[in-house]
Figure 1 (cartoon, rainbow, N blue to C red):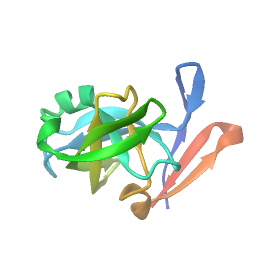
Figure 2 (figure 1 turned 30 degrees about the vertical axis):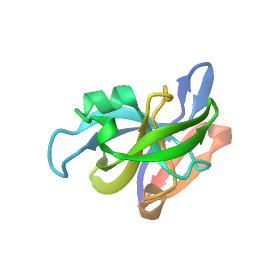
Figure 3 (figure 1 turned 180 degrees about the vertical axis):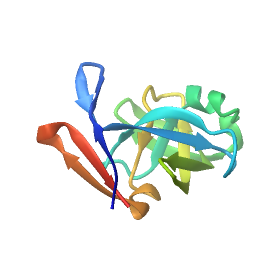
Length: 129
């Protein structure tokens, strides 16, 4: 069943597969809305430190992990979060970094729950669950 079809969003001059989602530290409360890039080339979900502030998360209390980004290698901090999309809530691991200016959903955890279709020619992302 198709959960949703999302048009690509304009970001820094390019149309990208970004979708509206909500995150929380708790399964049933205080979800914060954001847009995330769905990145099939990224293994892990990675979120900006500014978004951690919105969630009231002290990123340095998470487990430190080395990451490689387009901006170079750095340290990010892993936290367990709840992600809500439409009426589906899943648990996932997310890395927070002050090197990011965009929130990214990677394959780990998220792709286990959904079939994602990138319709590049139509600038659409389909989410099937």
